Amino acid sequence: MKKNILVVDDSALMRRVICDIINSDETFQAIDTCRDGLDALEKLRAKRYDGVVLDVNMPRMDGLALLEQLQKEKIRATVIMVSTTTTKDAEVTMLAMERGAVDFVPKPTNVIEAKGEAFKGKLLGVLNAVLKTQKMALGSKSAATPEKVVLRRNTEPVRSRNKLVALACSTGGPKALQSVIPYLPKNLDAPMVLVQHMPAGFTKSMADRLNEVSDIHVKEAEDGDILKKGTIYIAPGGKHMEIKKSPDGSHKIRLNDELPPIGGLKPCADITYDSLRTCGYDQIVCVVLTGMGADGTKGIKSLAKSKPVYVISQNAETCVVYGMPKSIAETGLVNEVVPLTQVAQTITKNVGVQ
Figure 1 (cartoon, rainbow, N blue to C red):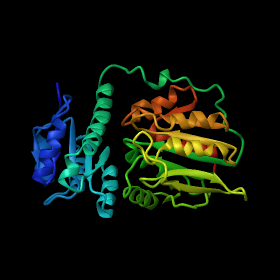
Figure 2: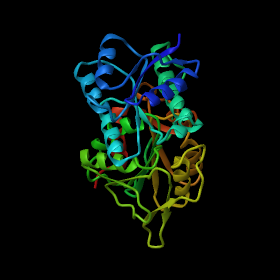
Figure 3: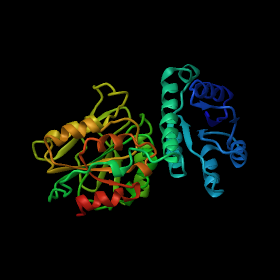
Figure 4: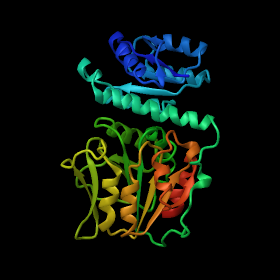
């Protein structure tokens, strides 16, 4: 049985293009479409869909208002947003994650882009990752359950106040971070660098939104930023983030625009982890959350050869996509596997407060 996807967009052309892309994959079918949130609400009240591809800006009822109504009426739906990179749309997209959307794909700016391979690959990639995970969760117990993870024997963190937290996430990450960052204390006794796979234009909105709802300070990383405890630095979309030790012992952020995307990713967590091999921190607390692929694994493996690491990974049951956490778990480097709601307290337990 093909998975049934509802497409909601006020542009007839975009509805047709998105349906064509979805129907080109033998896993999915997109038969039903809606031109705004009100039409979609009626359909979702009457019928269950495996997934919903939802536009942000629409007349009568926009994407955010639809998500709020679905929450109010307790209608369950797996929603993927399609959003332009304008500041306003990026801000709304971040709010959509809080309202239940699992992820988003950047909306093409013209017909040529919409019909291009890049947009097709991103949309089908997210649909396959998110809905494949759902199918596994509904079926028999997966071989990739946390019980199968081999934890490191040395589960004690290094006794030091000179630590850095380095977090990586991808698909489902913007939503997952809402359950982590706001629950970290303002006086966390370590800086945090964070790589979320996002295009340029979205990371600033995500950082600003997380900063609004958190006690800890959150900002989009800027070239030359000096790492300070109690601050989270989010890698800007479209740039790799490296950490460099200064002669005075401080650590600065270097945004690398020269390196190409690694496996299609820019920023790439492997680059960030790899740059920490020569840092002056006594221990790196590596955190890997939901995401497809294996970004972070190669970098953490390399880092572990030269620095003490303490690895925390999200468990399978609470991941939108159990890809990145599964990959690092299979290395045997993971110290703790925890559900999403326990990630913040696990970080705090390991680095302490000032």
